[in-house]
Length: 340
Image 1 (cartoon, helix red, strand yellow):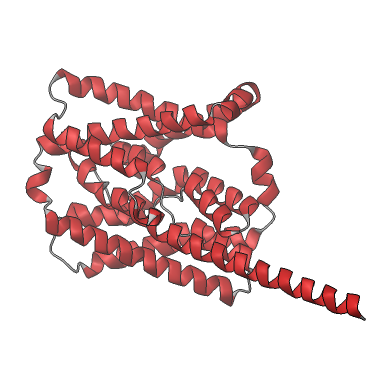
Image 2: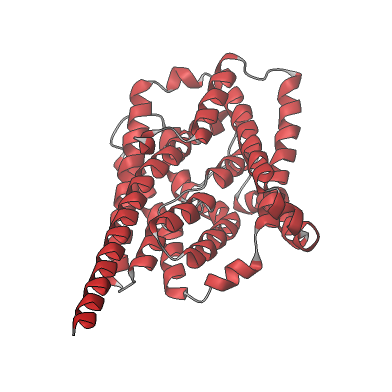
């Protein structure tokens, strides 16, 4: 089935990890890739800012109850689950794996896939655009704060929460804001070249992953991460996603949201952003730890796409069946009326 195919981005990530495993950057190339990665991250968030349309955000911003729940799911529910999972410690794997799960849980939602899946399933697309965009923007502030709050990180490249936030603002938020302010001049070009922008996004992420895994390989990542650990990460990602989806579905029905809003809550409240997470990890964590820490996020990226694609297809088929029944009912009534 097409649903079970690997996401093309996941294939590229696997190839990048293999490349870093066999040909890691060493010596002067480490410095070169450090500066190249910094420039790529700045370009990535500049493009994110340039793509963000204020008109689309305003169009869906009035649905405050929906947005409030999505933000709660993203920045409260997920982190609580991550903390409980790390506290439970079901399997004796490296502490960095559990750090990776917690880090994944504090990240903002994806934008593109959340909107695409909401649209496919017949949800409230305008609200999805607003929620996903707001989550991505707020995550630049909230995620580093949560890192400092729940993970108590003290690393060589981030000496505390305020220093982390300063690094994030300079390397991520500033390019984002400049990109968004530049939209009035480059907005038309960005809209016409969305495919090129998407490739720039992917290239930036792959570059960060290569740099991170090169450092991790030099520090012996594959001596610490085996098949058992990878299977544990996969099962952990599936479990966390299932719990979040179940709670979001229950909340949507408990609070009386309609079907379109339920779909939006389900898909916007259950995603974690690879595009935000990998560059941010490169700033927040020691270079030697980034490769292992982003493993749960990379696997969750594929898991969320596969599982949510199946759910979206079911919603779509159910919606089409209901529409067909409604049409048949109207036609039947029309025939009865014409025979009177």
